[in-house]
Length: 385
Image 1 (cartoon, rainbow, N blue to C red):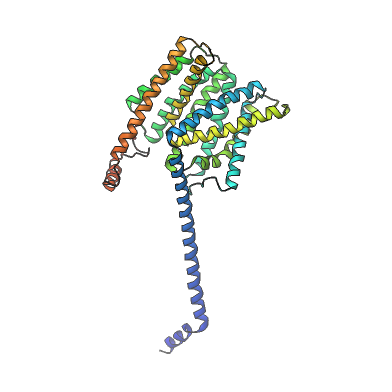
Image 2 (image 1 turned 135 degrees about the vertical axis):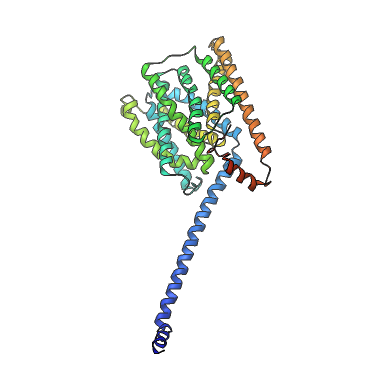
């Protein structure tokens, strides 16, 4: 009894009471700090999701594709003017300047808190690093291919990107393309091949560069589309994260793929202005391409690129009076017919999917059944498009 009485006296002493109160206050502070961290992460996630929803609401797929189409046509003529008209014969360095100006513009947007936030803990550094790396290869090798090959052979090489995307998406995600879409894509590829087959000029080195460009281009489009649609990235936020990596690899490619003399180039006001305009169009091209890939798919973006080729060919024929030949004209119209069929199948598929997903009707049961059957529509299961 005496021992227990001494323990009781010890516990009611003021010092012990202070220790207990301090422990309670420390626990309370830790709890409040943990709650603040949780609320901060929740706010960041909610802000990133709201930014993505706002981007999807403002930038409809048709708007994104039209934006990318106009900018791509503009930069084709501007880059030709820069590379040939003003004598800036350094395609990799030009790509480096494009991405550098893009990074500076995004840094200004971030300084004014206009740049959308990145989704927290969504993507690993490896996936961002891979995207930045293949983006540098895709952009750099494309410009080198245009330098050593003519536009016709460049477009012929681009045809191989479509089956590459189909094959890689099947290997990575189990994604299947319906037979009707395969037929439409085949018609598009044949039409573009016929439209450009009369204008094939290439060198052995240029052909090797074009072949080496196919896989990075396909991987680049797949990653841009996948990371935006599945990991809640906005176009600008993903560009902000990957552009420094792209700049690093483009700088490392300059000594190997660009001719010597870039540091002895004679700069003046006119060529500097043209290169800066080209760089600004490059920023718009990267942004519009990311928006289009996030709103549609990698295959749709490739089909849009082939549509640009046919429009340029027919525009030169009807507006400027150039005569590519009846075979090329028929091939361009054939390709446009295949693109129209592919677009119709996409719209029909979207309407059928929208009709199947009625709001909140047995959604829990359907999701459980789909999980049990392995019928996933996020691309990781056997998705059919």
